Amino acid sequence: MLRSKSCRALWLALALAAGCGRERLDGRYVAAEEAALTITLEESSDGRVTGSLQGPAGSVPLTGQRQGDGLAGTVGEHDDATPFTATVADEQVTLTFGTAQAGQTVHFHRIAADRPEAPGDTSARD
Image (cartoon, rainbow, N blue to C red):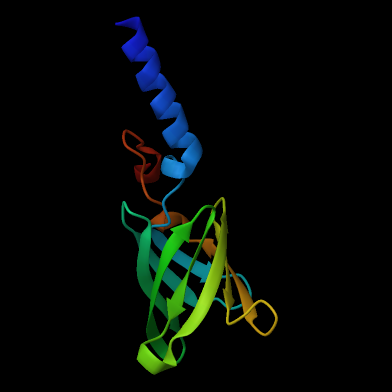
């Protein structure tokens, strides 16, 4: 019995270290430099991220896949899709559209009202 408990504890520790315990990206984020520019993200359990980029000219879809502490994907549709990479730290997402050499970087921060609630956490309702 002791051995099986220690094995389960080891597997749990490995799963958390591998990223299973990372914060989900679900929510709405606003650009630090331009409040009219926002992204809305939803993350599935397999790390797939979907959402949209909204700005003064309208909205375009955003799709990607979590990769460690970041994600990579495309914004836009079909032939107009532009690749992006992103880093995630705390309540911030930094998107680089295009390539690192010829791209544009935008810093977003999560809007507090859209912070996902952890199980048993009632602080968002207070």
